[in-house]
Image (spheres, rainbow, N blue to C red):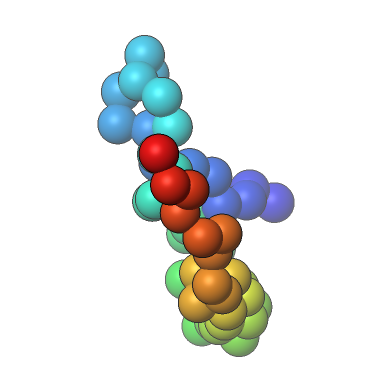
Amino acid sequence: MSRARPLQYEPSSPPSKQYVLVPDALLNDSERERLGVWLAHAIRYVSQPGKPKRKR
């Protein structure tokens, strides 16, 4: 099974730190629940407070 991977605009460009390509298989009706779980984990992760900014 293919997995989600970072978006890469061009083969020579670095992978995105913000965007992810989701496999088409996760968009099928039978896999929607798995996609929902995956999205819930992602939302929970980005909702956590980050490290405080360092003073320069």
